[in-house]
Length: 308
Ligand SMILES: C[S@@+](CC[C@H](N)C(=O)[O-])C[C@H]1O[C@@H](n2cnc3c(N)ncnc32)[C@H](O)[C@@H]1O
Image (cartoon, rainbow, N blue to C red; front, side):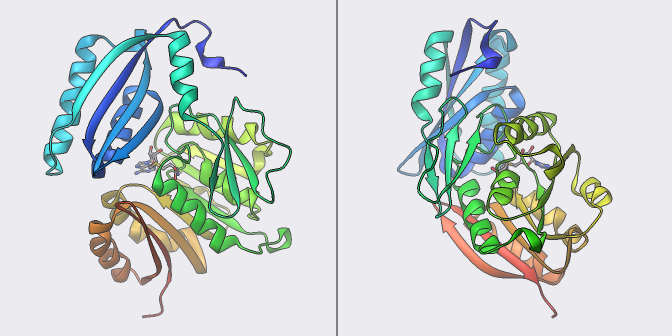
């Protein structure tokens, strides 16, 4: 068991945010940009409790008050009740146990089991592919419904894929790299990943190594969807994009440059009520929704190119 990032740290802020469920992704984004680690969510009756941890030297009480204000402003902008944000100081020892108590091996879909980095996986877990993750500061631990839905949609798309099929997947907004790693574990031959957050690039490389995947199997760089398109030597067979609906709508005009003529896409990070506006943008650019899956308030769309 090892916590490589903790050696010189003694105390942590534990930050707790209670908010309306649809704000979950926005809160994750804020906390992640603030430098928080190990975010976990519990849901009850339409509300969520998000817990996360920040090394004490990375924020003063004033910084935390500013964070609480941002979270309040975000909620008001999205027409939700302002969240309640609290923080306490905990010791390194408490941090380790707070962190660990939330993370256990987790089965996702029919083909995956996610293992936190500090748990040595069983040599086999039935026929499931073992996906190891260090839940650092990047989004994508497998705990969030949108990540789970994307992995399940990848299972459907890559079912029966063989190495000789040479399937290439683009991963837009890779976060921890979980979708790239998942795609490679179940049959993709190559992935191209991009994220506009440098922490996500570090996390993707770290998690790739943790899963024993060769460096050339996941091309990953900081940047935008345009940078990804400019750097891919071939069009992908399919892509994943688990980002917020408004960002996805802005990216739709680029989707046809990401993939070949039979290309498919997997979209999530979209609240069910936001599906119509994403569908309109897709329709305007000759994409059609093939499947619509829902978990909690989140939608996952698989899309394909349309002749019409
Ligand atoms: C919800 S997380 C998804 C992470 C992972 N793919 C998953 O499914 O769990 C969204 C990621 O997209 C990144 N992102 C947000 N806007 C972006 C943009 N315009 N271009 C590239 N990445 C973006 C964020 O930094 C974040 O890592």
